[in-house]
Image 1 (cartoon, rainbow, N blue to C red):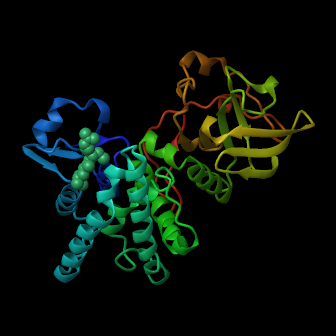
Image 2 (image 1 turned 45 degrees about the horizontal axis):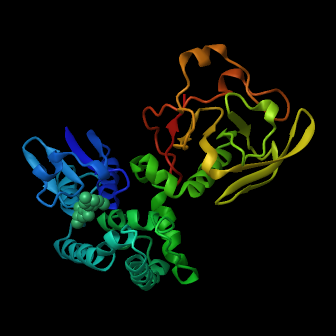
Length: 350
Ligand SMILES: N[C@@H](CCC(=O)N[C@@H](CS)C(=O)NCC(=O)O)C(=O)O
């Protein structure tokens, strides 16, 4: 089985995880702590960088080289163009992408203000130049999703995280980016640290997915001093809120706060929870959704003992309370579900 040594926040590793999930074959991702890299990495890669792919006696590094190997080894769906001329063009564009954009990653992550500012300005200019392409085509190379889309996506995902604001001129590019972000494989490939980089976006996409599919979205929150919630429904520092359109009014899912009004035991209450405190959003009916790491949060896995108590949880749901077992969600990702098309692929939350 292929093994990918991957940095949990590394955009280059993110590319390779994305391709592995697109191909849907068996592989193992080995998370590497970038600040405490095991010595093996330098043995496998003379540049001591991630990602590194190992398959039997083959050891590969350089994300684009790894991705081309995976693409040739598992040709479906093919990500490099089949035609040699188009393939050569794609390689040239991948090269340009490294020189013009990804060469700035070290500076963007350096923590040195001058260096970071220069890199941000450079990336902003290059991306704005790129934006008009997407008024004419769906993807980088035309209508088909290809390796170029894989290669650029981790940078687009990190724009907010790097403090890069592109504004209106890049609107077609960001629309394109959201199309890529909603691919099931892209969502599957995200590490917990990467999910946090665009958590408000993911929460909004999940919410829409639930509502579009007729499910009841439940929001699981770790309550802290910033949360404005009915304290009588808080259990073990957590609350689960039904945020379906029929249960809440004026729902606003902002970048910092989720706010709405709802009735609890017949009394109208104004609710406000920091996005940072949300540890799961899932469909009550199926348990599909997504979990997030929340600092200092109680582990997202519910113990068997807790499950057995079946303690009824809080409910702002109109009519009968939530079924007891759903009260405190257990966030144990298991197997991925079938993509439903266009929307994020969701993991089951038991
Ligand atoms: N060109 C390489 C770049 C890989 C790279 O720069 N990886 C970073 C992590 S994102 C790294 O390992 N840096 C060395 C370090 O942090 O010690 C590729 O495409 O794989």
